[in-house]
Every structure is written in structure tokens, then in C-alpha cells.
Image (cartoon, rainbow, N blue to C red; front, side, top):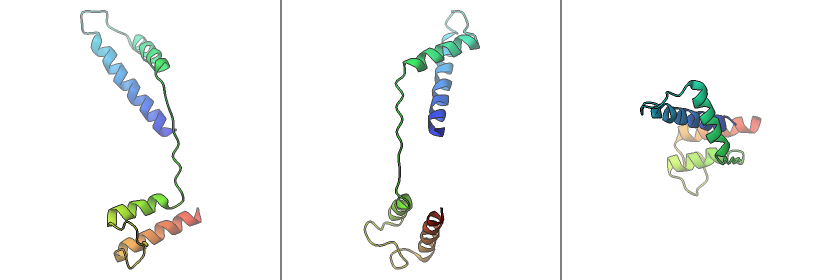
Amino acid sequence: MKKNVIIVMLMLGTISITATGCSSNNQEELTEKDTTKVVEEVIKELPIETKEVVFKKGKLIEVAFRKHYGVPTAELNDTNLPFTAAARYKVLNEMLDKD
């Protein structure tokens, strides 16, 4: 939900800047209300799609550690990771298990 709000806010800012930029072409200056109306009309016409991504518990951490430490298939443990990385990996997974 936060991402959708941020995207809409960015879109509003961009459209608002575009609308106010047009007013300097020897036309009537747009008031803030006029700009808001223009933005609302444009938003009504925009097709908005939302998607939800669900990760398996711990999979995101595993993928990140594999990519960062270059361990594509081997088990992520003390043998295949540096000591501190293995400890971090273990603690992060333990934290997820508690939740």
C-alpha cells in the first residue's frame, strides 16, 4: 500500500509541475485548484495495476546471501561462507523463525 501511495504522489508531483510549466506560455495562469482538477482528471484515466509479491520465509535472505557471497548452489553454512557471514545468516533466520 505504501508503494502505491508513493507512486501516486510522484505522479501528482510530475503532473503538477507540467501543468504549472504550461502557464508561462502567455495563457491564463493556472491556480492550485485548476491544477488539482487537471491532475484528478488525468488520474481517473490512468490504468493502475497492483501486484503483490509473497516470499517464502527466509528465501529472500537466502537469495541475497547467495548472490553477495557467490554461493549459487552449495549449502549456506560455516564451511561455504565466511565466519561472520555465516553467523549473520544464522541469526537472521532465527529471528524469522521467532516471528
